[in-house]
Image (cartoon, rainbow, N blue to C red; front, side, top):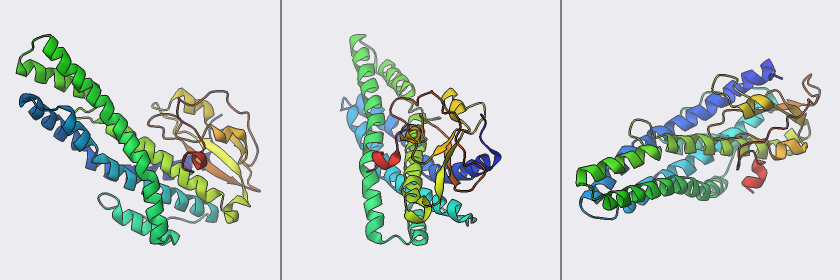
Amino acid sequence: MPSSAQAQQLAAVMDAEREALQGAGIRRVGSLAATVRAATIRAYKSGGDVAAPIRKIVGKAAPVLADAMAAAELQGILRSRINHKQAKRDGLALSDPYRAALKMLADRLSFTDKELRAIAAKHGTAAVSATGEAAGLLERNVLAAVAAGVKANATTNEGISLIRAAFQDSGFDNQSPFVLETVFRTELHRAYSGGQAASDIEPAIADVLWGYEFASVGDDRTTVICLACDGTRAPKDSPFWDSHVPPLHWNCRSQLIQIFDGEQLATPTTLPSIEPAEGFGANPLLVFA
């Protein structure tokens, strides 16, 4: 069943908030693909360790992602409170990459510096893990390319071509570094949902929160998973939300929309049987506990 017009409108606002946060980080790390490829090729030409520049340069994305996730969590908290108050949000000017956004959001939410540092530290580990997985995939593919070149007695230029192909296969192409972009979009979505969930259990909101409606974007890029869940409504304590909180897959754009007591939409629907992609959909209160 398609999600309600009200849910679609709010989902569009929430998606725009995340897109604004994602854009700053994606622009910042987008140049890393070209930098790491050039450094890896230089190491190969000189007979050095081709894995070293991958670890060093891709690792620079981790602190940017951590700041982005912290900002996304605060934005999720703010969105939850605004929805509860049915107020309109003033535009937030985001700087490159996230320091000003973090301060602005923290000020609006009356967070102390200590609380802000705790949020940033919490996301630091997740950011290192996420970027580390991307770097690990690239490193394995590059080492395999070098090994293949040695086995084939390839010339230097042939070896460089193999390395370039390994970068492309790993999603680190200069024109479209989609692996890092996907990591940013998905991890920010997790943090945004985590902030919303954390705010929703505050007594002022929890006391009047009936549940949620699942809202997908519903365009030609929407997955079968999210289309099946679109329009699903269930009480806040439904076990369904233990495993179906967006993101439900890589690059997921769906949202959970709050439904409050007394609203016309505060009625449950039939729950879909479809499951999220492996590793997705978990209750963010458990993920970030």
